[in-house]
Amino acid sequence: MANEAEFAHYTDQIARAVTEVHATLRSVTYELGDDQIGRMLERRSEDLAMLRPGVEGLAAAEHRAQVAEGAAKAPAGENLVRTFATYQGDVEQQSAHLGRVQRQLGSLSTGMTPEDRHCLQAGSQALEGALRDLDRIEQMPDRSTDDVAKLRSGVEFLKTVVDDVDKRVEAMTAQLSDGRQAAYRFHTAVPADVQPSAALRQTIGRMDDSIARTGEHVQRVHAALARSSEGFNAVAEFSVNVANGALAEKQQADKEAAQLADAVRAGVNPTARADQHPVAHQPESSLSRRLDGPAQEGGLKL
Image 1: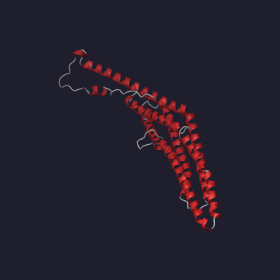
Image 2: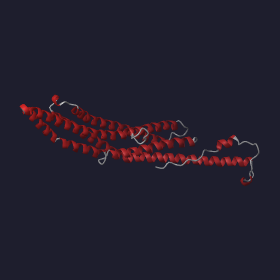
Image 3: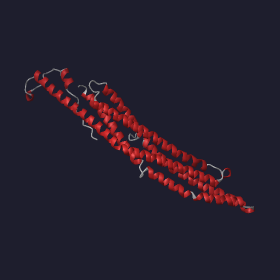
């Protein structure tokens, strides 16, 4: 075989991409668990439940405004407007809480910063690079082996998972947007244009449905990732083993090249190494330069 250094370089890059994606999937699995985003959604549902008595309070204010007569009519109407505004503020606050959950979900997809590599979209890009490296390897003489085919299968598997989870995270954020849009409509409503108690009841219901659907989606994705965790780990371990094997092959080739270079030098100048002196004005042979391999690199550890 030839091209040991090139093969080692590409397999090292592939292993690094795979191990980074493996870490990303572990992190996403954790974030989607009951103790993280699952708990955030549960709290939002609990907060909405505390708003439900407000429906009865608004209904009572509506009734007083409807039956008030004479001098009592204006104060009753003003009270209804104030009560409605209070619940508009409460709903707006709950919408802001949902926004924080959306941002947390979004960070799984795009990262916390533009430079964040440990997120789904960055992982997808890294795996695209790994597939390009595999294309290059398969064009090298004697390198289209069963191990390389298995490595490609593993990278394609991870790419499918990462892209699918990213789409599901996007769907979760859209589900929360449904609830936030309902909150916005309530927050910007004018009491004279709606039945305040009915509007509050409908808004709470739509926000709660949005949270419930998102929570169910989160649980399904979390469970699927947890079931596949052993497969992710196997792909990562295999990619590291291939990379370390390629590095060992390169190091052996470097060693043999160095030994051959020593033999060539000894043939040109058979004097003992300790007594050898460079010949004045004699440049290093092109053969020597070709046979001196590149510096050894450290192996990738999982």
